[in-house]
Length: 431
Image 1 (tube, rainbow, N blue to C red):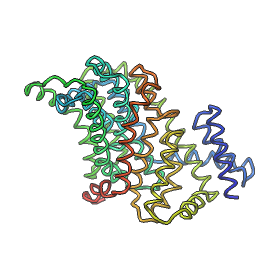
Image 2 (cartoon, rainbow, N blue to C red):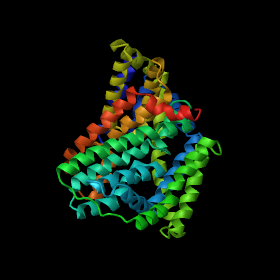
Image 3 (spheres, rainbow, N blue to C red):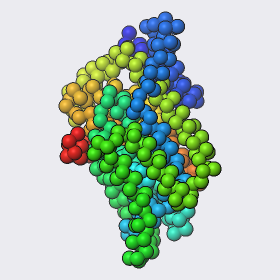
Image 4 (tube, rainbow, N blue to C red):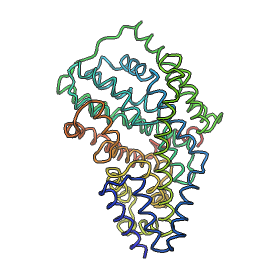
């Protein structure tokens, strides 16, 4: 019966996606159909609805709308251009310097906003015209922007790590935030290496020399924006506030900073709030339907069946992790990150924990893995945003993206098989 339920779940979900049904509805319908195999219709639909409602009754989830609001404020509040100017001071004179600026600015903005989409939009809208003006291929510029925007999903604060904490049954958000620093920075450095090789081969120009005095003032100008990282993460680690409270502080700080920069006025706040509500409603609908589906799978013993199937293939942890990574890479191509984390964490986490893998480490591996899917068609949201900002067709970006994809997968393998890279900082701070 378990295998019949797996077949119904997979086939119904794929069919609905092919028909163009939005993913949240596809998840809800396929979950309800699977539940109908073992429960009568009225209690089945009632139970699924109850599970959707109760899944949103979580204090930790409050952090998501707050961080989304902070990201919206930063996107409009003049923070992106200050981070770009700061990045130019650091790496602008290196070969292919503007590509480096793009990557570092994305890492900083993504870390502050916690959103790859916001980062790709904010940094890309500034950097793409500038890179084109300096002679960079627009497709290359878009590829750099798209892939580097995903680093903010691992570098804290990160909404998706909060979602993983919920799906995993309460893994420490602070520990996950700390665990993301080294993998996120390593990803950025490897992307910069790829960009440097391409820039050298294509003889892209070197940026203008920034004088010591000008560089100092640009650094001072960026300090208020960079302080948000210290306030949020430092406060969580020191125990002054929780991740949810930190998200509210981030909103207050970015609002005040945006008004000081005179980029956001009180008249604009209602529009920013409406955009935040729209994005939050989509995210929370995905969370609700995905958590409902996770309960259906647990009820049908699907995680146990998948676990047994994996262990029947091999008992070697190296092989099992490789298989899980391949599955998640495939899933990320067709499914948005939030439902993928909520659905597949309960399936794979028990398997890797039985092998001795730390749940914190697995969370970083899962998020890095699914980040690749954000850059690939047909569902890759960051890919579409990056191409829209660059005003270029997706087909033209695919080839320049390939070396960056390879780099991201190499880093993923390194992080997967070297857990110390993820666990050193959490252990250092006692998590």
